[in-house]
Amino acid sequence: MKLLMLAPLALLVGCAGMTAVPTSARLGAEGAVIELSDGSRCMAPMGAARLASCGAGYDSLVQIEENPNLLRRFLAEGFVAMGGQGILAPMGVVTLTDAQGRAFQFASPPPDSD
Image (cartoon, rainbow, N blue to C red; front, side, top):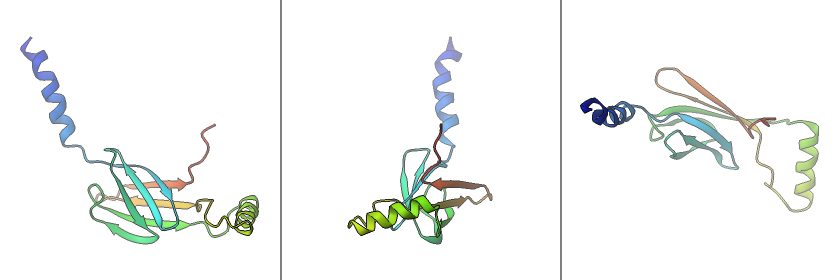
């Protein structure tokens, strides 16, 4: 019985040492919004940067796809012609690397999960 009462405490202590890890990234006009497993968010600028205050700290690399597929380019040009600059989010890859060298890579927009 005493052991059952200590189980929730042991579970909390075990979870307390876990650090938040990146779970998703979405590209925008200014950079990428990174979401961590603890629900917090941080911003990574375009290009390479050090995100010291993002979770445990990550090196980030935000790369934009300069020549997306033909259909996407056609749609983007159409939106611009109608005054809708920036309606489509940019396409690219966001790579975050932690201090242990583990890389977390996200495509944005994320691929369809059909």
